[in-house]
Image (cartoon, rainbow, N blue to C red; front, side):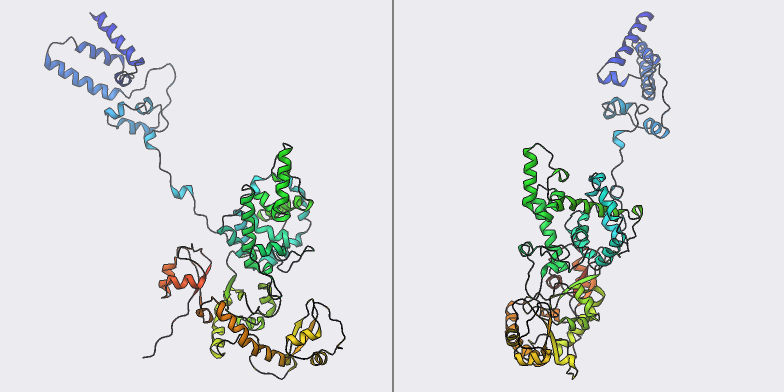
Length: 555
């Protein structure tokens, strides 16, 4: 009988080791002594004794089911925390139906039911914005790390020979670079593009190529018009930093979409044209060659174009490694663009802003003359800390001048000196003394006398002539009727822009509603004044025009 019991127990133990049913998994780690006790109970006839032994067996089984299996291999010491968690886990049918790893936590490294939840703060750490604009640019690179640096190593070596170049581009870029970086980031474009004006023009807004490309972004006349940059005898939008930056980024995004979302192809096409890049790609496809930028057969200038951009980006990211000293540019807005609503003399604008005329013209290089075009645009770029003073002084002039009279000259009082009795005129192609005299309502004799020249003198383009002050008076008088009438029909600027608008620098977390409430105005008026919509996302550091405070009503 004992032999039979032993055989049955051994049979049950074997079945527990290899069985695939619930009981097999449950008893897989139960010692043979417990199994013998269970089999002995079947031969007991007393019900009470049977129940007592059954209960004690179940209790023993519940505690022993977590014992490790006896193997010939050494068992690794379990983690104390995991063992404690396993021993105090209640034994339920749900736990029994789980995998062997869950039922034997000593063999498991981590329970699948106790995996930590991902933390947004750990996934996206809050990185403070760098104080230096160069650091902000290098932190937004997405193209440089994908390139083989040996492709432009020689270009980096050449740049290191001209260290003064980096000092020059730092000074030239200082007023404009923050606006360019903000515009690129707003569109989600690679920040290497912020260095394109360094390659194109060394950040010089008056730069002009032999092929008639002009401005920071070196737009050709036709391409500039295609992207909305107006060009006439008064104004050249290719030199307008704000307008040209928007147009250049529009152009690059268009090329990016047209060239299968490849930024290197798009940037190459910006230099040599989309057609040349497409032909080079088509040629390589026919020959079974790769079609990445570095493998394309492009014009000589374009082959050096992206290596220059990548080399500059590399040096900007690690100036100390290459022995280059970059002048710090604060990572904060410097410029603000306002609309004065009508034609204005730049000398007057400089006086109202409290800055030298040379600085004003450097910030507004699109104006070809010292006065805005009669039909606009009337946008004026000023240092952000000069805007409020400019608008306050402009409001005082508006209140004194008759309605409809443009702010055409900076001379607000009569003077007997020579500078107030004449003004300068720059000679253009096709000009002659008779045309100039007629245009300014004067005579050839007066022009010759004032400029001490002969009526037969040949005029040279780009030189200047003095125009009598009487011609200016007549010009302003005629401007009252003609330009003012056209301005009234085409003008879309709110009258509030002629008053003393306030400037608000946006802080982190602010929205249009809170700003409107702070200044006791409406979201609709803020949107109309700043040319935005209620859904526009505000960026910290940017500026917002605020309507002037309503004067207190007299009781």
